[in-house]
Length: 372
Image 1 (cartoon, rainbow, N blue to C red):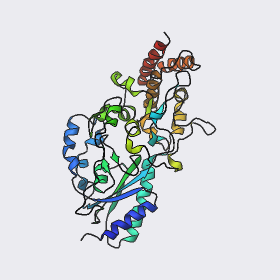
Image 2: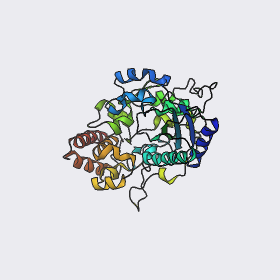
Image 3: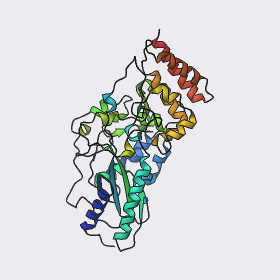
Image 4: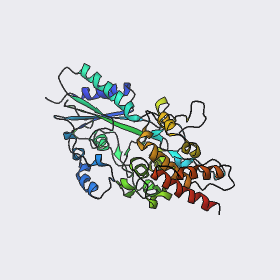
């Protein structure tokens, strides 16, 4: 099938924006240069226990679907209009606060992306007369979306390994459609991908508490706070606990400090605003009260995080993380919350879940040390 006219690619981009996406571009289905060292990255153990990253199909998008010729990459802004984690500071005399990553404040982005990508697929089926296959991946398939996005013209891969766009920064989700349609790439034959505009900046590298960005453009995911608080099962290694700070689910620091996110556009989309801890509560997932999180019964956890990215950590991981964050809070003995914290952690230290009990004991020892 001969390559379609550039008007077809332009039509797809226009329909994607009409469906609510902020960016859209088309890349050819080919092995991108960035993936040449993927096996080496895996061999270094940087994927940790994330077995799905070891799927060899991720090294070549042409293996995602038989006959695939084009990759349609879409970006969706989730930057809710609230301060960054680096703009908040703990109050030792107040209620201890935790941090949940910005992307997880609202509804599960997989479902939101999936609905819009499938809507775009449906419009393509109605628009293009020739038979073709198309499959939507909402961060769910063997694709390296950031590389595809780079060659679709959406931005460059920054030193923190995230995709950066000169106009909207990095606060966006990426989704893709693989298709057998021979679409004209958004970047013409004479066009290069967007230039790397990180320059000499090293703020993301220097700000990472666990030193997970081991060199520019290389992330040891097994050290990343997002991995430790979301993907890792069992106990968090003690060597990383202090560096986790107040993080209960994920981490935003390398994006918070990025100069390209200083003026990132904000979204008013209700799906990405922080959920309330309870229908009549003033507390939300933005800088939540750690003691309230730790006293949440498992049934309440399941209710609150139904249809939320946070459920990926499961109750055990979530409580484990909140214990570590409370242990790092530097809670003052003069605080009204001090005795309550001791009580809550003591109760959890007797949990039948060994991971929760051990994490609570660790946090308890840290809290008690501040009172001596």
